[in-house]
Amino acid sequence: MKKNFLMIFIAALLLAGCGPAPREAQEEEEARLSPEERAFMDNLASLCGQSFRGEETYMAEGRESWAHLDFVMHVTVCEEDRVHIPFHLSDDTSRTWMFLNENGRLRFRHDHRYPDGTPHDQTLYGGYADGQGTAYEQYFPKDEYSRALLQGHYGREWHVVMDEEMTTFSYRLLYDGEIVFQADFDLTEPI
Image (tube, rainbow, N blue to C red):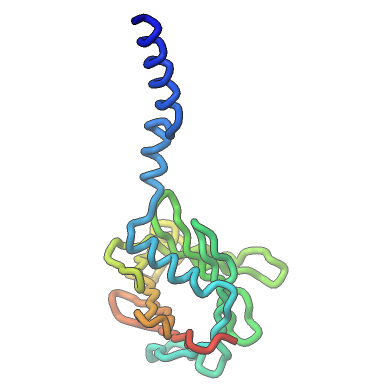
């Protein structure tokens, strides 16, 4: 009887050690994106290794137009917790859009760098997804870091939208709920 009890006790200890500790499991669960955010990241990653041409489709009156520039996005880094998309305007290669899983929250950042790789004074601004998005579109209101960095631009928000057929990628900048800039990229013809 003691021998059976001892064997059952040892088996229970071994089985208990097979899975993650309760705290580790809880942290792992907390670091997961929502199903919609995970699907959005997967949709972005499905474009990995490809580049696409785009164009300015809207610029608010009074802002400098970029319509004369060549728009190209390159989907270059596609990992479980990050997707990076360098966005070039003709010869200006200073911008990269970064989609990141930061402790279970989807974050969108703009990485601006000089040609030598040093960061601009205004870089890494963006925001966290607001929880209202889908597998094809996410909304990123300005976060606290960006609020301090980009003073004077109240109610700044970014929308990143792909149509369900994955034929168009749109980047939108809004101020106080009004679109001030939009660029659309044709996903049907990689370059």
